[in-house]
View (tube, rainbow, N blue to C red):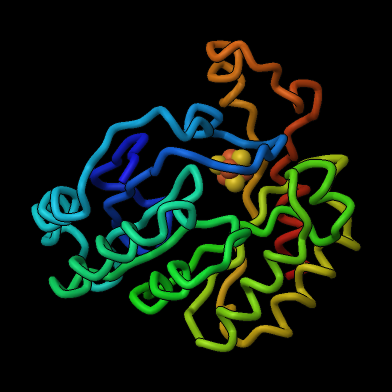
Length: 230
Ligand code: SF4
């Protein structure tokens, strides 16, 4: 598996304390991406599922009842076969498995991976096709189809959305997100995250223009208001 980096004890990506694996490689180009250094499929370090599972096991005592492993990225679904092997090994060890994904890929390997996934964090970036095409680089259709599949196989799902002023911070957009939540019984939580520009240095270092350099960050009041709508 191509790995970008590992965070041994994270608290932001899924329930409880988690061992977070950020995989290398992503086929999308979200304008708000915080990890442009994970894009290139050819970068990253090769690690086997067995090697990672052995490292995860060392942290088992910190996971408690809620924690476990999260695989994030990059896009984990591009390496679904190997992530599935990793999750199989973790599950066999009683370790909870969580997948943080854009939900834009579906094939037999992805279905196999979902069979050994305890929770999905689905990054639903916008609520309409035009915004997806303009700001992500794919249609919203595969993402909604992915969510429909999660609903069919009933995998507990957290919807996550980064709120970006001028792009998706409208009441209308949050209402649509609510409707998506309410029409999928697998969704048990929704997280709205504030757009932050801390990643700008990464873009500068990579020599890639940051498309949202002039976009303001949302205020706490604005975030509270949108969260209350949910
Ligand atoms: S899917 Fe994730 S890693 Fe890929 S471009 Fe979007 S935010 Fe970045």
